[in-house]
Image (cartoon, rainbow, N blue to C red; front, side, top):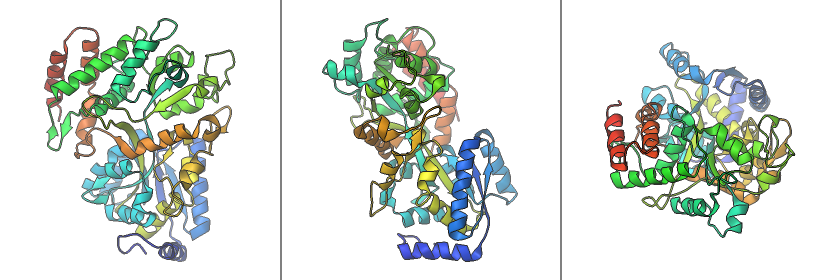
Length: 448
């Protein structure tokens, strides 16, 4: 049983499953992966769990936009589901509110082995030494670049501000080749996401332990100057994810910042977003010429940062605890590939293996077919070192406000789009760096 914390032996785990089978209790599982194909995969996993334990799992789809309000209402009514698949933004607030059984989640992580999880996702869910929810999967934002052109020009990978700027000098030659396609459309969340990554890379955050903290003038100026450089090496216009993908796919950009959901499209597996670098929409030419960087650094933060998005299994305080724990453990062990196969190109394994087989799950993940109109495993599309970089980014993944317990405040600041607007004013020459930093500090300090 999960009666005490600590690493559980295989025998103890078997006892949990055996006891659960004897009880034959049904549990409810809320998931935001509600698209029909993804829902079917989760129902298959629930059926596998029932076969192994005798415990049925009712898989209930919940729209991501409704998850917060539905969970709050269910908590008030004493009718929470047993397990909730949720995003990072809910982990600590729900733990503080008493919605999540953090002791139960911590016991599962300890049973599976803390060392088998990526450090970043565990750190993001740290709750006074406990784990608020069990990390399931995640992805890290990527600098996607033309590795072939970098090699031809003797350039280092774009893992620092300096290396990116050196590549701009060498490769920016419009209209044949733009050095970058930066996000400049102020009202797009894409710009917010890219900017947070760039700020994190230089160690700059607008929140501290006590809430708002003033942006450091020198480090923020470095961020502004870097962002202006990549914007000036971009095509004109209001740019966001659509243009960055299209221009890179046409072979007309040296670098972009994107999520890993581009990976199957880049390899010619999706007709609605096909590479146009040549006349073959199924071409893998561009994928073969591409490299990626997940962790990159500014001059004030040599260690750099990766921007990560992580999803979790939350065990609720209304749960049938032992069965819920057994289900989560199954989903992260025997059923883990089924869990990740929901959308493998954007669900990197936060648990790379077991204590006995450290790379087991990473290797198996690389063999899961991805794509829409055509399918192929990641290992057949990209080199092993590139896949290692993709998964490895989760070890150091960060987000504003997580470590400080201020994720909710940081999210409000991001959603205000004040940073986007002021950075764009700086890019357009409407305000100097000192004025931009002062304006951001003024507007962000008023958000609570």
